[in-house]
Image 1 (tube, rainbow, N blue to C red):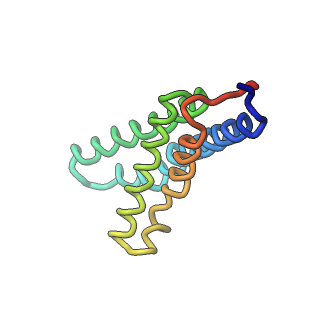
Image 2 (tube, one colour):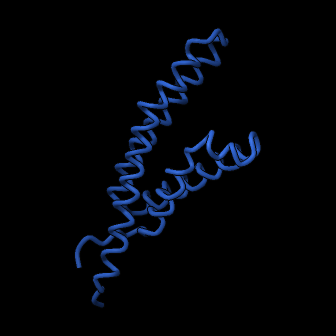
Image 3 (cartoon, rainbow, N blue to C red):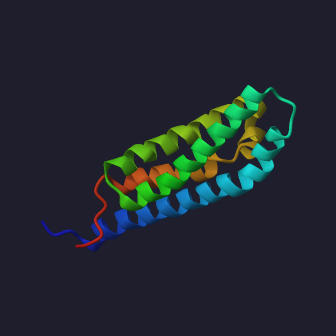
Length: 133
């Protein structure tokens, strides 16, 4: 069966969109988020187990976001699974933002703005991401 150019280009565009947003998410979290969220928490007098847990979890998420960029680039079933993780993560930020501050919470916790479209794009790209006709 011959694939049309639309069947080839649409998944490829979706994959590249997911890769780009995942890369932006990874950079924003790792660089900007560390400066405006992690550093202030580490400078508090919270108990060491709280600061240590925050530090470790923060770096685990950084690693996940960086690795997910590669996974989206590579494609396959792992990209689809990571796409669902992005969509579910976005849902957590949406629910938490709405629960804590109503609509303003969506501005206070804007992570969903990158996670949701990146996850949806990865799901649209499909498990097999054709690059050649």
